[in-house]
Image (cartoon, rainbow, N blue to C red; front, side):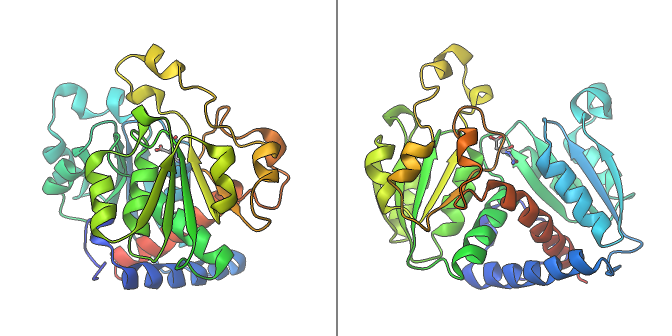
Length: 307
Ligand code: NCD
């Protein structure tokens, strides 16, 4: 896969060799972070357009750009303070911002919105989350974290736990993981299971999976437990979400039933899905994930900018 000059809108764009190439580059970027000497993106500008709340993803992209000595122009509140409030189209916003910046990263609450902006853009646009649909770079950094911890992804059993219906992170995860020889344990209440098209896609790619609502009973099979909070903002009525709150909690009891070398991932933020008591367990990797995210985004920015 050629990265240079390409929009990164979907995990569907990646194949196994592109993923491994990106992980290797991210490994190099971790060295750059330690040495602090690389200026390969000097003179380049990232425009960071966020229409939906973010802590990690925006900071991570902006830090990645700055670690490589690039510049950043950023708006964390596009919904209320950009020309979209004057009814400018996403197409035109893309066209305009691409005259100013060399690469654009964007998050928006509607599925397909990042692609609309990308249509107008003359520079690469990276999807930082479009509604319930996809969050490709979180998927990339999740897989990088697995690869780093196990030195491989093939042969592992991956638990995806929680609100599988609405979690764009877990959608992106399953779509990337299907390139590897993995088994899935899908843990959710029946009503919050993976969308049918994603499940069909897993079937077609030949991945084995089991569906259950019993985390305690299934955790012992997992090498990776990737959980995500209830995506309350994606429910039509937030009271509907409340009935699922606390259904799947990762706590010391769950860890006791898990393999000694299982790893716990979570894109964060967490609510009650992971108790703080888990943080000190060496299997908890969700803060390491945040760190890995910067290296993965450095690698991706360097690749799309062709340096
Ligand atoms: C995720 C997101 O925004 O989809 N957060 C993140 O980017 N790290 C997960 C979430 O909000 O639950």
